[in-house]
Amino acid sequence: MTKQFLAEICLPGVEASVPLIRHFAGRVLAAAGHHNLDGVQLVVTELVGNAIVHTRSAWMGGLVTVEVTAIGDALARIEVSDEGAATVPRPRQAGDGDCHGRGLALVERLSARWGVRPQPLGTTVWAEVFTTEDDMTRDEGAGVAQGSPACGVEV
Image 1 (cartoon, one colour):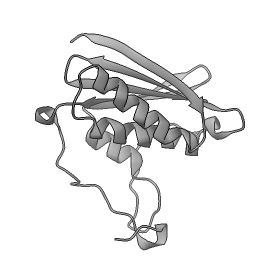
Image 2: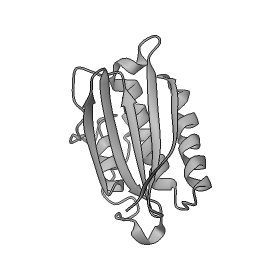
Image 3: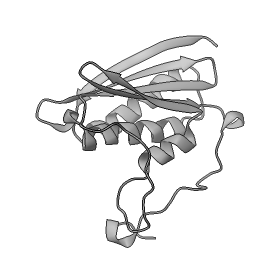
């Protein structure tokens, strides 16, 4: 398959950057002819959110960089680079009452492939997500735990 770099954005590691980056990725992929973008935008939200919560990108002056690449007509690759942390991103098993810990499991479920690549000054987490309805590898909502009232989410 042909890979085509589409765009890159670098923003401060603050919560306000998450919806901007999600919107950016969706617009870039739509302009490139991709149609089913919900999964990609959810994956972007999770990866950027994790970079902001768990890495030095959230420190004063920290940045998050996102690269968007098309792989053929039906697959998008998202790479989120942060400024590093003491731990390596990995999915974990969240308990029913836990407020966090489901993001990478969700990324794993929505992605055809995903992984982590250490960088000299940080970490890149990447995911490849299908952008056509026919190629979706998931059942809507299956296996995704809901929030608990303790987290401020009504169930």
